[in-house]
Amino acid sequence: MTTIDYTERIPNNVDLASDRKLQRALESWQPKFLDWWRDMGPTLPTQDVYLRTAVDVGREGWAHFGHVALPEYRWGIFLSERDNARTIGFGEHMGKPVWQQVPGEYRSELQRLIVVQGDTEPASVEQQRRLGMTAPSLYDLRNLFQVNVEEGRHLWAMVYLLHAYFGREGRDEAESLLLRNSGSEDAPRILGAFNEETPDWLSFYMFTYFTDRDGKYQLGTLKESAFDPLSRTCEFMLKEEAHHMMVGTTGVDRVVTRTAELMKQYDTEDIAKHGGVPLDVIQKYINFHYSVSLDLFGGDTSTNVANYYTAGLKGRWQEDRRPDDHKLIEDVVSIPLMDGDNLIERQVAALTALNVDLRNEYAQDCANGVKRWNSILDEHGIATRVSLPHVGFNRQVGTFSGHRILPDGTVVDQATWDRGVDSYLPSSDDKAHVISLMQPVYEPGKIAGWVAPPRTGINGQPFEYEYVHLS
Image (cartoon, rainbow, N blue to C red; front, side, top):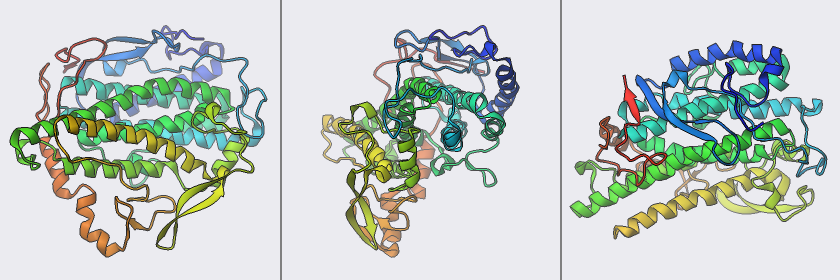
């Protein structure tokens, strides 16, 4: 099952040719996907891009690099190898064999989980479709397109599951994944963060650091699922997702590095006039993207998520490493909540607080990036530090929505929030300055002045390599 068959019209390692009905259905969906890519995918015309393409789902040697014309990229259906001895690792069915078919009693819940995950994949392509027009280097442009094609393949992964296991309803949902559009008033994407604009490359780096990192943790919970095809699909998707987060991590690294260089060169924090992104603006972008991404974890307590866990549909991050009974029936945890206008800690059933459990894992991971960025500032002799805002800051979902909480955790009234909001979140002037820096640089080996070059290139190639041939 590891080798991917690229002789097929739809590359796959699931023996698609043995199910002619399914193959015909997916081949019917394929032109609609290509139409969506043409209409909603990258707007910058290119001849070809230096991309990696999956050739194997094993741990070694699964990525092949070469110049590919974007419309000819071979999107396909790839699942990690099946473990015939795998058993359910949590919930009331713990210890039983994993499911190869969808149990009737969980059909609607599993379909919903797959649809919501699937909806995020094309959404990010739509959000990023114009960024190629302002790429700071060919290296960055190549990374953008790599993220885009892999998000498109992740959409294929979810569509395969819908077609293969959910009948007519699944096929209808697969159609709808191409009908919704990010930011549309009539048919928006399901989750709020995927209707936000990504108008500039600082936003792109923040998105791939914070929002794609949320994707890592959501995929990690689905990888634990008792529905084995979903688990194996997500396991392979996580391999590709790692690159997206690398783009975000090193992207913000490079912005912070260039900002620090300009601060030292001109001995001032006011580097906007010198063509840089001021440190306080970087902090405001962190505040925005982190808070928006926290909303993706849903409500602080949820009986739906508790039911998903008990049923075996969706586990916890790294479930097999948890030192408990993996059922949580009697367990309680303490979580932050709002009591009127006061922040409190309250004990709740652990099963209902699984969103907070996952959110905490995510927050700890995000904090690692902050340490990296502060280390860069320290290396340049700059005492100012960046930080993550309080978990209740700028929230639209859960217990903190409807409350005004400052980045330091102070609860304030609306008037106080309004007076200071431009110091917490990007102002119109901040956004206009960042947009003014977005001048494209398409010459090999050159880079825009607001971001530092990467330390290494892609797949052993130098930064000066011609990663993209433009039309």
